Amino acid sequence: MTRTNRLAVVTGGIGGIGSAICVRLAEDGHKVVATYHPSEEEKAQEWLAEIKNRGLDIGIAGGDVSSAEDAAAMMAKIQEDFGNVDILVNCAGITRDAMMKRMDVAKWDAVISTNLSSAFYVTKPVWDGMVERGYGRIINVSSMNGQRGQAGQANYASAKAGMHGFTMTLAQEGAAKGITANTLAPGYVKTPMTDAIREDIREAIIATIPMKRFALPEEIASGVSFLAAEQQAYISGAIIPINGAFFMH
Image 1 (cartoon, rainbow, N blue to C red):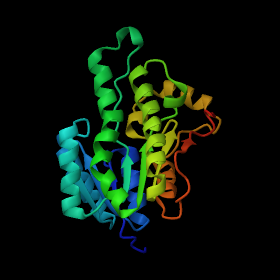
Image 2: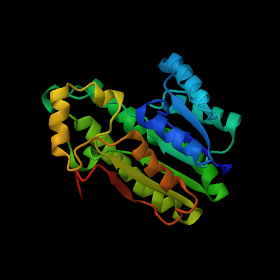
Image 3: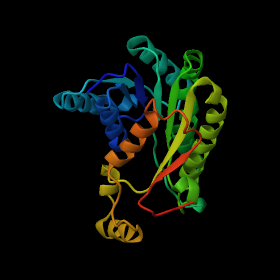
C-alpha cells in the first residue's frame, strides 16, 4: 500500500456504511479520521480496537455534527492533531420516520440538522484551507430517496435532496480551485439497521430491487474511493446512484 499523504475525514465513520468507507480509504493509502457522536464514546473505542486488530491505522474524533459550534471545534481539533483535510466524506445521518400527519417539529429538526446542516457545519471549517492549497475532494453521501421521495420520510428525503444542492454549489465554487464535490445516492444497503427490519418486510423490499439484494457497505465505499482519487479531477457536481437499478433518473 502506497501512502498518499492525503487526510480523509469521514463523519459518522463508525457506522455501517461509514466504517466501510474508512477501511477502504485507509486501504487506498490515505490517512483517515472517523468522527462519531460523543454519546458513542464506548462504541467508538471498541470500533477502534477492532480496526487496529485488522492492521489499519485510523484516527477517531468525537463531536456533534448537528451543532455548528461542536462541528467547528471538532474539525479544528482534527486539523491540529492530524493535519490539513484533503478529503471530506459527509456520511453522518439519522432517521426519524413518520407520515406527514404525525411528523412533528422535533423529528423534522433532528434529521435536517444531522443530515443536511451538518454537511455545511463540517465543510465550512476546511473549505478555505482547500481553496488555499488548491486541492480538495468533498463527497456527500445522500440517498436515492432524496431523488424519488419516500412516504414517511419528508424530513429525510428533504435533507438528502438538499445535500445534492449543496454539492452542486460547492462544485461550481471549487471548480477553479482544484476542489471537486460529488454526491453518492445509495439505495438500500445491508447494515445492522436494515438487518433489523422484519424479515417478511425485508424480503418484500428486496423483491422490488432488480438486482434482488441490498448493496453491501463495501460497494458504497468503492464509490467513495473512486471519487476521492486524485485522478478524478474532472468529475464534479455529479450525483452517482448505487441502487441496483432500483431508481434511475
